[in-house]
Image 1: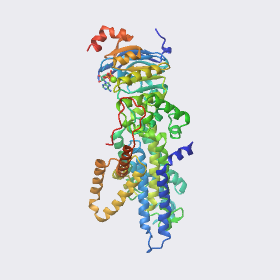
Image 2 (image 1 turned 135 degrees about the vertical axis):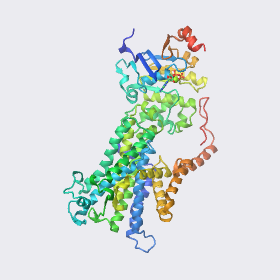
Image 3 (image 1 turned 90 degrees about the vertical axis):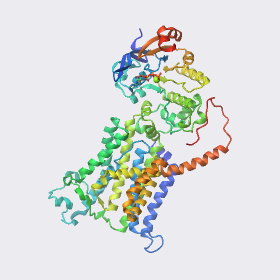
Image 4 (image 1 turned 180 degrees about the horizontal axis):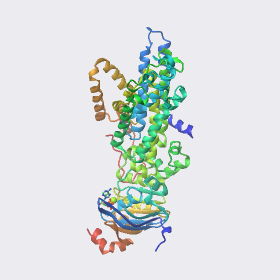
Amino acid sequence: MITQAIFRAIDRKAIWLVSILLLVAVAVPAANLIIPPGQFGHIPVYLVTLFGKYLTYAMLALALDLVWGYCGILSLGHGAFFALGGYAMGMYLMRQVGDRGVYANPDLPDFMVFLNWQELPWYWLGFDNFWFACAMVMLVPGTLAFIFGFLAFRSRVTGVYLSIMTQAMTYALLLAFFRNDMGFGGNNGLTDFKEILGASVQADTTRAALFAATAVGLAISVLICSTIVNSKLGKVMIAVRDAESRTRFLGYRVEYVKLFAFTVSAVIAGVAGALYVPQIGIINPGEFAPANSIEVVIWTAVGGRGTIIGPIIGAVLVNVGKSYFTGAFPEIWLFALGALFVVTTLFLPKGIVGLIGQYRTMTTRREQHQRPEPTEHKPASDVQPKPAE
Amino acid sequence: MTEKIDTMLYLDGVSVAFDGFKAINKLSIIVHPAEMLAIIGPNGAGKTTMMDIITGKTRPDDGEILFNGRTDLTQLDEAAIANLGIGRKFQKPTVFESQTIWDNLEMALRKPRGIFATLFYASDQADVDHITEILETVRLLSRKDDLAADLSHGQKQWLEIGMLLAQDPKLLLVDEPVAGMTDAETVETAKLLKQIAKTRSVVVVEHDMSFVRDLDSRVTCLAEGSVLAEGSLEQVSANPHVIERYLGR
Ligand SMILES: Nc1ncnc2c1ncn2[C@@H]1O[C@H](COP(=O)(O)OP(=O)(O)OP(=O)(O)O)[C@@H](O)[C@H]1O
Ligand SMILES: [Mg+2]
């Protein structure tokens, strides 16, 4: 049953995308580690990490697209799930520091010693274990999304009200994580990591491995998302997006459809955050900033929502642009981003991918016109399909 | 008087008010198993609102609504009511425009509606045959891979009727099915609905009198949220109140 669903999802596009990602997962680390510096084809380690960061953003955008593009839930708080996954990984990395911190306390991270805490708070227990931390990376964002979604979707909060609630959620978490007594390092967050799974986080090999893990993680996310959207449940999600009330009258529980998409999406976002933190080397409350979540929406819109590849393209392109602009003309980046969003909304409602799709339908329609019309019986009032608007 | 338990749909003393305006006023209607009931009445009589109440979209302020003689519909939501076996076609045809005609029917097909059952659903030959048969009945087979948005108004009506068939309900509530159809299609629709009513209960709302005549069923005329007249089409259309309030205008 499950294998059938996965096989159906593996259409040509998904195969291509997954193959490219797996190729990238091998090729980029190889180009860094095997090709010596200075020779053609060598990718310096800072670029490996930068690309790795883009791919975690791509994963976050894909997660958002699952709820926004396919299910019509415009979440303006997806950065919260990303940050929570990041914090869970950050907690593991903090515990790995051990007694190599400034205060050389074997149990307590530096910021706790600084605050004069005597012992580790209960919610930090277990995070010295990598697998426990990995479970939390998925469980914490997933549980939050489940509870939030259960309450919101059951009371039929939709549209702009839901968006505002998600924005409020990430803002509330921002304020909470800023507090020192929350036990997550307050303003400074978690940083000065030393090791992950016994390997130095600074080592080239570790960075290459983290990049490979991110590319594979994105490939798995693509498989999960395309399995969902190509299933009948994916069709029902689109039905909910387009005509929510009608879907109820067919007997589908719209609130559960949304809850499923929202929770899966939050888990993917959490994993993306967990892959982001060891590569960037820090997680702080700034990741909960509402503006971050809104940026994710822009990446997704620019790439093309309601497609699997769109958000990935959008996240990578916009962030390449951001890296360039913030280096070359830092003061105009926000204007450029705003302008990009306006242009996309006005002229490219389906994003970059939609533009390619439009070109393709134009050419196939032309081909169809050259073929003779089918001659089977049709009811008298039958009209020809409207030409593309 | 019929026993409640023998009815498919039983409405007794149902009322609903919107901001003090009584859209439905002590409405009582009975539909038997395998029976067709045509409902006529002026604009704003409350015909659509009645369907909203039965299908759980609107909560009645007062009154009793039973399905199949037992189930109290006032306590259930839209999805639960649909899953009991009540299908509805909307006055404004509502199909899933961005999806193909085939997918519209596949979603409507009577199958487990749970999240994981839907996620791992794989159509078997019986399902494919069933959808194909429905597509033939509603004459959309040649359009099965087209988007629903590309259909004409009348064809969307057909598609929505097809979705009703796929749902395989015990009770069909059909709101103005022939709006936008040609005369020939209207005749076909009447035939199809009569065929369906051999095994299921059907409630049809329509303003097209020749269509109602073709249905050849019991007729109820609503006005201002209550029953104005009941009986055969001849009896109802001869009723002086009906002539004054509806037909004579
Ligand atoms: N949700 C609502 N809020 C306020 N008023 C409503 C609502 N739904 C219906 N009404 C009012 O109730 C009355 C009955 O409307 P309804 O749509 O049921 O009429 P109808 O008999 O279906 O008419 P038509 O033949 O034009 O379709 C109308 O006056 C309408 O404005
Ligand atoms: Mg109406």
